[in-house]
Image 1 (tube, rainbow, N blue to C red):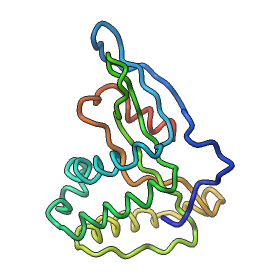
Image 2 (image 1 turned 90 degrees about the horizontal axis):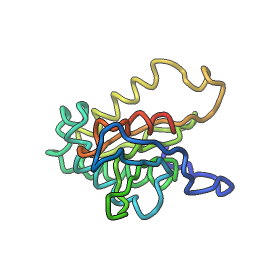
Image 3 (image 1 turned 60 degrees about the vertical axis):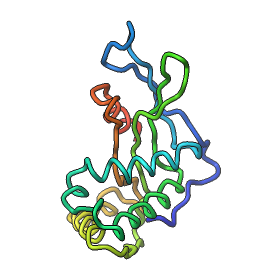
Image 4 (image 1 turned 90 degrees about the vertical axis):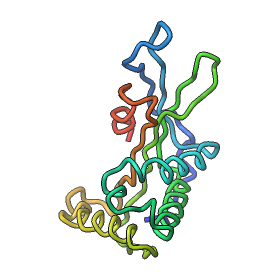
Length: 175
């Protein structure tokens, strides 16, 4: 999964869509755009995933990833490797002063038919990745779509202050 790299022939970063938020903020609706996760946001995205996503998302929360140092660092390493594939998406917006802010992210990876699951230390990460692996093997996606690769996800996160604006839906649509 983490060995795949985006081809150099595909423009990077690309803006995939723009949209208007649903809430009135300061007399109008906030403008957003979805783009590829560019270099300057990679560390911020990994930090949100490791410090916030694992506490919000039910599977990682129930697996107590935050209390398991090996699993915690395993997820950090996994997300760092995955964002380096340059397939993940982010949603950005500007505040009243024109400063750009991250509103959300969808950490994406390319699943390959001949992938072998990497083994990570830590009980929590093994549980979570085991469940994800079991679910992905319920149906042979590769045969279903007649391809040796497909775009898969390892987490979608919207920062709390941007929830209710349609950010997650737009990230999924762009995916």
